[in-house]
Amino acid sequence: MLFKAAAVGVALAVSAVTAHAQSKETVKIGFVGPLSGGNSAAGVGGRNSAELAVRLRNADPKSKYKYELVALDDECKPNVGIQVATRAATDKNIIAGVTHYCSAVAIATVDVYHRFGMPAVVWGAILPAITYGNDYKEIHRVNGSMLDETAVATTFLTGTGYKKWVVVHDTTDYGNGLLKFFQEKIAKTDGQIVGTFGVSADQQDFSAELLKIKEAKPQIVVFAGLTPLGVRVRSQMERLGVNIQFAGVSGIMSTSYLEALGPNAEATIAFHNGAPPETMPGGKKFIEDYQKAGFKEPAEPYGPYAYVAADLIMAAIEKVGPDRKKVRDVLNATKNYQSIAGAITFDDHRNNSVASTKYVAQDGHWVRWEDSEYVSGKRKLKGL
Image 1 (spheres, rainbow, N blue to C red):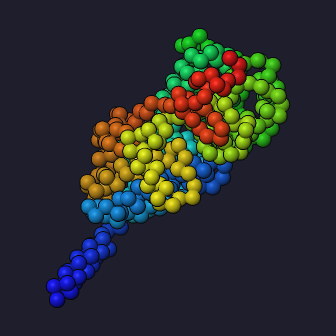
Image 2 (cartoon, rainbow, N blue to C red; image 1 turned 90 degrees about the vertical axis):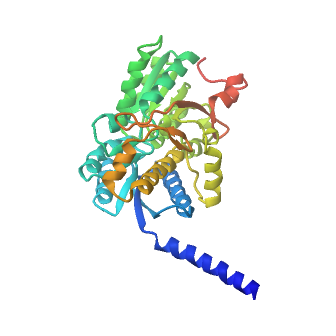
C-alpha cells in the first residue's frame, strides 16, 4: 500500500510538472539569415545554434515561458532581407529577432526593425554602420565589427612581413567598408596597398583582374568578401598561375570554403571576431550540447554568437515579459552579461566589441594561427 501510495504521488508530481510546462505562454523569437544559396552554411549553422539556445531554455524548469524560433531565409540578398524582416517585424507575436549574417542585408533592414519597434540582435554581420550609422535603439550586435577585424588583420599581416598588398573586394557596403578600413589602417604602417579591385558578388571570371595583379607583383592578395566569391577568386588564381599568398576576412571562414577548394585552400589566412568555440568560457559545453542535439550541419564560426543573441533575448523576456519596448530597453542596458562567448557589454550604439583571432587553413581545417604548424616553421607561407 505504501509503495502504491508513493507511486501515485510521483505520478501526480510528474503530471503537475507536465501540466505546468504545457500551461506556459508560448513566445516567438525570430531568426533571420541565409538558409539557401552560397552562404547557407553560415546561416544554417547560426539557425541551429539559436535553436539550441531555445531548446535549452525550454528545458529549464525555471523558465517562465515556452519559446519558439521562427526561422526566415534572407538569402544574403538585401531585397529579400527587407521582405522577411518586414514579415517578422509586422508579426506582433515575434517579440525580437536574431538577425543577419550578411552585412549588405543587415544594413538594408535596420529601418524596418526601427519603424516597427522590433528589437534585433545581429549575430554575424560586421559592417560598423549597422549599429553606428543610426541611433536606432532597436539594433544591437553581439559579434563585433570590421573595426576590430581589420585592425588585427592589418597589424598581423604587415608585422609578419606582408608590406605590399593588393585588395580584392566585393562592391557591396560590406566589401567597400572593409576596403575603407584597410586603407585607413595600413596608412599608419610601413605597408602599402598597390592595387584595389572591386568585383561584383555574382562575377564569374576574374582573368582581367588577376593578370593585372600578377603584373603588380604584390606579396599578398587580401580578399574582402564572402565565401562564394572568395572560392571563385582563389580557384582562378591557381589556374592562372597567380602564385601569391591569399588572405581573407571572416566572410570566408566557413567549412564550405575549405570543402570547395580542397588542397588549394591550404595556407589561406583569415581573421574572425572571437576565439575558437572550445576556448570560449562556455564553448566546450556549447559544442557538447550542439552535438547532443543531433544537428547534421556544423555550427560554423558565427554559430556561438547566434546562440548568444538568442539567449540574450530570452533572458530579457524572462525579466520583463513578451513586450517589445521593455525587451528593447533591457537589451540596451546590457553590461557584463555572462555568455558562452564571454561578457557582453553594449556601448552607446549597442555594439559589443570583440577581439579578433588569426586563423590559417591547415589540412582542411581552420586552425588558430598560434596553434598551427606555420608558426613553428614546419610549413611556410608564400612571399616571405
